[in-house]
Image 1: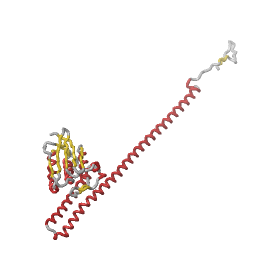
Image 2 (image 1 turned 120 degrees about the vertical axis):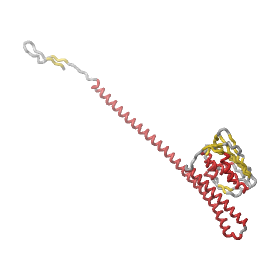
Image 3 (image 1 turned 135 degrees about the horizontal axis):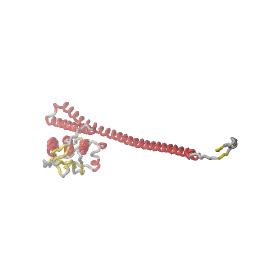
Image 4 (image 1 turned 30 degrees about the vertical axis):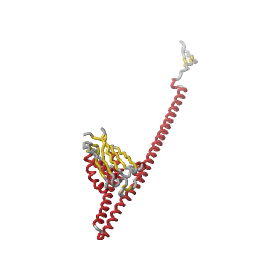
Amino acid sequence: MFTVKASNNDGLWNETGASLMITILPAWYETVLFKVLLVFFIALILTGLYWWWVYRYQHRQTLLEQTVAEKTAELRAVNEELINLVATKDKFFSVMAHDIKNPFNAIMGFSEVLVEDYDDMNNDMRRELIQHIATASKNLYQLLENLLTWSRFQRGSLEFNPKPVELHTALDPVLGALLPTAVSKGVSLIDKVDDQSLYVMADPPMLDSILRNLINNALKFTPVGGQVTVSADARSEAVTISIADTGVGMTKEQVDRLFRIDTSTTTRGTNNEQGTGLGLILVHDFVSRQGGHILVDSQEGVGTTFRVELPRVLI
């Protein structure tokens, strides 16, 4: 309300005055509607923030549950794998312990007979017993050597230093060492690796173990009058080494179990030589370590051929 009072020239005032009603509208941000809308939007934002937090929390919980489930599944799988591995190694070492025991029994048995009946024996009988003791000792040594080598390889403590190796040079000492075994069994050991320019990329000690185990295995399961042939075939990128025998051969089931540690069993050669399969497991692991492959062809009663493919080096 705007009121004006005035006086005339005589000094008389109009006490009532003249009034004018003036209405002043509030600013937009001072209106009730704005305040209501402001409260509504603040509530809406707070509600949105709350539900966004709830979503993020639930999403994190879901991811956490998925991660926990995945890790639990991984741990369960690893645990089962460890259980199976322990069971497999327990079985394997049980077989190995049994096979180590057998040569000791032979050595002790023949030694006792030699000690007790030495004076009653002629030289041929003594020589035969000593030969049995020597054979059992040799088998035991080879078994322990393979076992120790395989154990070092499994632990990763076996050095791997591949370099170009001339195949004939690597093969000669192996054949020389195994020739007496072949002669004593009446088995022909034939070397058909004539090319002295064949080089493979391999770790020399591992290559020696591969050749020695394969040739020795072939001799073990080849009867009198049979033959073991070592040959090589070269291609541009690889050399295939073949060890073929005219031995007892194997069934398909036996071939499928050759390189599996969980199915390792004791076998006997044609002269009752002892075999655990550890040498072939070692061969398989060593060939794989060189970046090579091993194949087996066998026919029961006909013979077996092992083919080892290794990377070739052109020099």
